[in-house]
Image 1 (cartoon, rainbow, N blue to C red):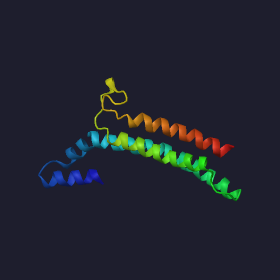
Image 2: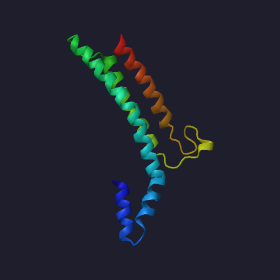
Image 3: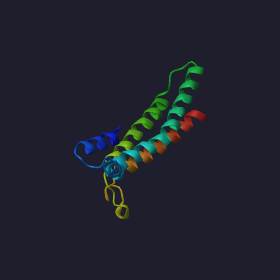
Image 4: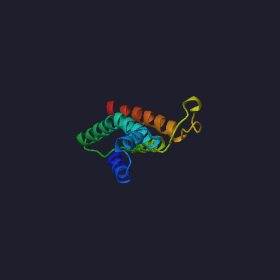
Length: 129
C-alpha cells in the first residue's frame, strides 16, 4: 500500500526504507486515516446489520420500507461518512485544546459521531418494533 510506496521512493533516493516507513506510520496523515478506518470498522457492521434486519422485516411483511425506515438507514450512512471525513482530514490535533472547531478537530467530527449514535437508536427502534 502507501507505506510500501514511501519505502520504495526513499530507497530510490538513496535513503533508508525502514526509516521512511517508520516515519510514515507516525505521520498525522497515516494516524488520521488509520483512526478513521478503525472507528468506522467498529460501527459499519452494526449499522448495516440493522438496515438489513429492517429490510428483511419489510420484505417478510410484503411491504416497502417506510419513509422513516429509509431515512434511518440513509442517515446512518451519511453521518458515518461525515465522521470518517472529519477524522481522516483533521491532521495533527492538539489534545489539550481539543474542542469542536479548535485544537485541530473539525466540528464535523462530533456532528458525525452524534448523528451516527442517533441513527443507531432510530434503526434499533425500527428493528425491534
